[in-house]
Image (tube, rainbow, N blue to C red; front, side):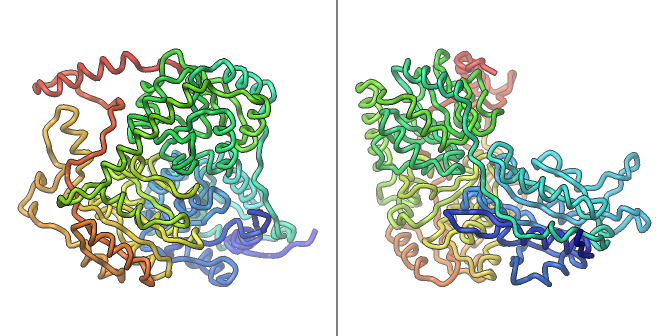
Length: 614
């Protein structure tokens, strides 16, 4: 057997470079780049090897490990899980800074490869710089904190482990059912250790993401259930995007006359003008869409986890409604006593359509969906219209960005009030053109994620909408985008606090406290951040606007700029697009506030309608 003597770190880099994936008939690198911040735990071995291969696997410098991890997550989402970015850090705080980003990837079922330095396996120099010691278990390091937030975890204690763990990690991240982030801990002495690796381990490999076909009996049972339906609906989740099933979903819905509702992750599965599109559902969705779902007798849930924001904590469905869970992951397919169809969404929809033949939903049900969709369109038009008032509402800002957008553009947001406003008021101009990180609802994703999405998008603009609270949590990747030349357009919506949580706080009977800046303890509560000046200091083009006309002009100018633009606009504190769907939160059972007791009583009434399936 031919062998080559390499360090563990060098072998790792050569393996990553050798991996390719087929996308649209072309073979491209599976690992197209590395986000890296170097420290003593990774610079001397892994950093050295990356430097020696700088033209084969580019390295991008971030400003924080969390930001790099979030950029990698957004890149994966924009590439629809077909390519995987690598993230590397030193030991200690560099590693733990990745944990939040790993949680985002895990919750959203997205592949990212995290590689962090680790303490010495020999333990001779212990305790080393940044080591957290465990008196009862010296083998534990901070890298064990990743176990809860990755799909695959390993610590490399011998170079030969790479021969098994790198292929396993790669296959996990490409598996449609098990897809998620992977973590490898790389102790400093092991990274530098040499070993005779088989030359074959570094031969060029081309991966093709599998499309597991569903069991024929499961398909037939699903088809029989749909044929019995009088009021069927389809819920399109993120799995539609990851299986590239948008065309099959469109054809299926059109041929069989079934209204299609979208989750946050599934938004832009259909174009907004598709005849069967019925709107966004869930707590951040529209009442019209939720009405369709509540009347349904059969629900075909395609590629969705059916989380509480989609299901209204499982109150949106009629108790008698039957669910068909079409999902690559059996874990998701069987939720709440669903009739499972375990398989790839694109392949399964095509085969299910063949079994259904010419069957269609009753015409009156099809028309009912169309009527509610028209009502949704009227709502959006009224919410996004310029009423001449200032500050602007979230919906008006969304409408202004939409008016400037084209089918080549990409829009994104994450936590706070913007997910609901974008989910309802954004009408998709192209499929797979929307990213709202709401699996982990991670504040700070909006800026770092925009940097990653810009890397993945070869044409068009990336528009990211962020609240003032999220901006203050994680903003340094504005500079990362300027440094790397990856442009995006950021709209900062400033309502002087965490207004959406204040809405929840007061809406559940409590009093406004510690959310708005005006409520903050201390003498500086009247001081406001100059976001435009802050972003300008990081090299971005900036503008402050207060009207729709000014926002339109700033957005137009941002398209022409050569680097990231930040547009700051004041937003109304309490002007929300209404959604009446119930969401279960922990309202106190006893309280000295009558308002809290009233909300608790109302919540218990809503919970009476909660679906009891498992």
